[in-house]
Picture 1 (cartoon, rainbow, N blue to C red):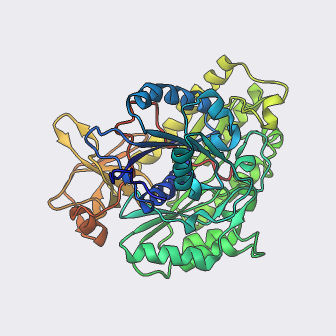
Picture 2 (picture 1 turned 135 degrees about the vertical axis):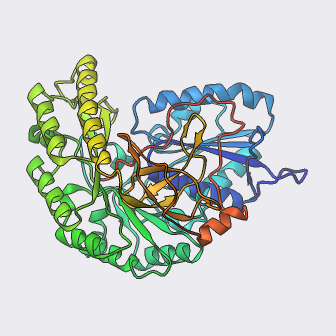
Picture 3 (picture 1 turned 180 degrees about the vertical axis):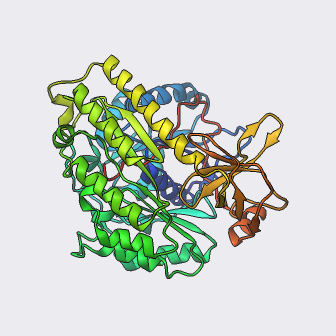
Length: 493
């Protein structure tokens, strides 16, 4: 199979990704598969892509409307470019299947979450047969990390340790789309992390729908804590993050591994979803608010500076005013550094969609605004406490925040906070700097003073030489910008 046309011209591709980090990581695999088959990423100069791939999400509200709206925008583009192909994959493809081709017959390929590696062959078959190809596998046959990847960054990488989920949360459709949990063996994970570190990657994020149930498939309940500690022995690796754990499976050995392994960042993203025990019960969340807060107490006792973030759903069916007030109480007690807050809306195929007591949208919106206001004040207060502190920042790609004539670079502190800082001479994406925080906002920190330190890295060298990988862009799709395609993972949800 080849991305070359009959006249020998290499075909270009572009990928648009929606959803969580798992989807973004899948898109790296799709890009790797396409390039291995002879395709090239679309150029940055407005070139029209020959192949457009949508890697979809079924969790976000109105995900189907976004997809079909985008497909509608592409129809005249495809009509004007004979030979152009459109492929739809990801969770929405797994759910809607042939319905996508019925509603948008100009789509060439539909593939599911379990057969990422089939994309090049399906594109070739669609061209040869001049007919749409729909292939949806019901279970994972090959773990996606065995596929080639075109990494998004030279200095940070995602590493999947598991796919799928064994939970039965009533609001979540993920288990039916990604299947039961499948765990990679620790040796395979560590081999991938070691290879990344050897290439200059400084930071990895371990991905799974429920990372701290890792090991259940091969019978080792302590496997995740052991994996974190083993990452600490890898030469060149400086930062390890993970997302997302489920409170039910959070154990003391994982907290100890976090505290005792220097490369594990002082950061924890753990979905709460609701502070009401009655709502948690209706969600089939197998913990209660007291247990959740006790985990945070244990984490902070071991890691005092840990920045803790969460996911919260407002307006779940049956949520009363008292239930919502309980959520606000837990938020005030938890003092999250950040919260990803969502207004509940029914998802077809989930038990919650048919529950009694659907909360009116106006009530959901009002509660949502109140929750955001409470959390913003907490985030701002916590960030203000960091003014005057020197932090280590891994410099990110792209220009940072601008305030008038002031230009800054950006990066992440070890606790995951976003820092905009005054650039120093020779600072490159992938380098590490130390800088003093001079100003705090609810969602970012600013450091306008001179750098306290700057360490050049191999990843920075690669960036400077123009050899760093970059995610395929949406240039040339002829599509309007629609929100933020990639958001936080709701794994463990």
